[in-house]
Length: 141
Figure 1 (tube, rainbow, N blue to C red):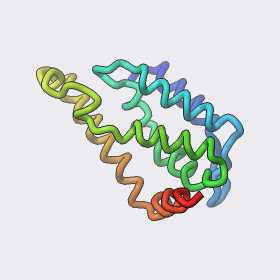
Figure 2: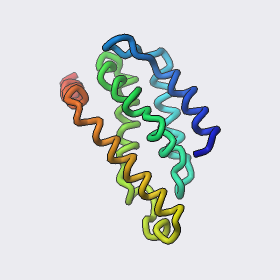
Figure 3: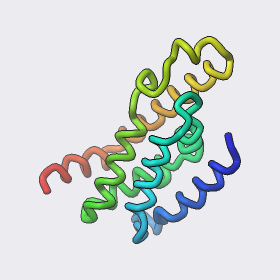
Figure 4: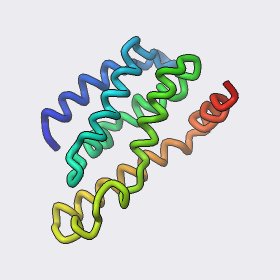
């Protein structure tokens, strides 16, 4: 993974918020940082999807995005931004890249495998009932 991507991700991730006991404190710039991450995902290399893979390897979804989702129900800007980002992160692999082309090389096969594993891990975080109850409650605002 590109060192610059991981360093930038660390900086952006630290700007999202921090955990205090059971509560995740959302920073003032969280919505903007989430929107920047989402923008970067749409601008990334369409073949290797390095930025998306770096996000998955950093475990930002589990460490930051889920706690933000659970604790942002009163902040519509942050809630909307985290939902948009999670939608982007759960796009099926088949829609992200041309599997037939990537499957012709070892690097391509590795990319497909990593993207599939990233998607699986992203979906697994929704087994936490707190994530789905927040989404359900938010529909009634």
